Length: 404
Ligand code: SAJ
Image 1: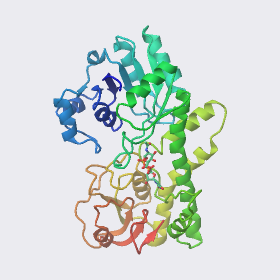
Image 2: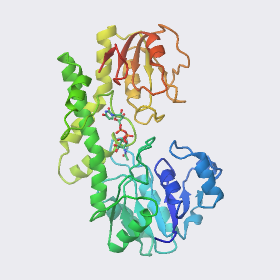
Image 3: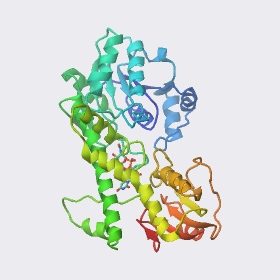
Image 4: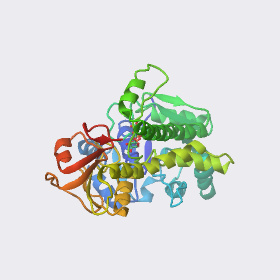
């Protein structure tokens, strides 16, 4: 059983804080984040992510097992540094590694002794070796160890957590691999070692590219079956009776969240940088990004010209029972409906703030059309349905209305 380590986790978002509370069970953890308000909340036991309860955080803080800080001086003598920061796309939809590079710089400038440095942030193969390690060694003479272990946190999921989600680890050298395995074994039961960081980085990207491409395939299939007047969800359920060699995906209004619409572009970026075109990824991105437009074309078949019509979007987060609106298709649906001259409103019982046009109470026949973009388990679908003359369902959860 490995001894308790001093662990610094850079980034206390949905990945970093989730990791912190699990690592803190057997280690002393400092959560580093530049957001001082967030740090203050965390140190009073207030969690900003659904998977970490305030009570759990409060106990860890009061037992001095966890502490948040924005002070770089406080992270100087860690045994392990974990980078868990966002890896978004920039305005050209290319990888934006500014947060990863900033985290590497913070570690390089403050680590006072040799440590194990692990990257959990999703990025293209070579990021650990070519970006993180190189940046740290440009700044610091200390010889650190390096490993990659991509995050596999699925917000809101209860059946798979840090404990039982298999953890991929690839490292530069055997000692780094051994120490990373030791660290993750203090809270994870399923460790899968791979031969290099690049293998771990590539596996993560392929996991999510697999989803993006198959979601695009079923979205294109939905357009075909609609023209053939065949009920697609019945077709998919029928295909899903095949006990092997098939995995069901559902058509939707597009692909939201911080993973699936983003990660594949990290893979296509590195492919194209190496002279290989990632045609499946580019096509999948295109098909999924066009779905909001397709949804509105279908609503025009119901309403005719959308000009001047009142449209309600029911459910604006990117997937059911999650209040996250990042990259939500609802945004593209809203923009396209406005562009077609409609008046757009939205109703979502679990999303506090989004775009203008929030509706709190629903009255019968107040809208010309309601588009069910996301249906949360807490929604009263009938009340929402009755708030509009017509309805279009993107989710497969609303019976008796036009749907994808
Ligand atoms: N979507 C579809 N059809 C599908 C599945 C998803 O249109 O059949 C849409 C969703 O509505 C959403 C988007 O795609 O807008 C992404 O959905 P997702 O189920 O992939 O959920 P995410 O983005 O939360 O993905 C996370 C990922 N977890 C990690 O990266 C660690 C992903 O790898 C998981 O497989 C996924 O959760 C999951 O399975 O829940």
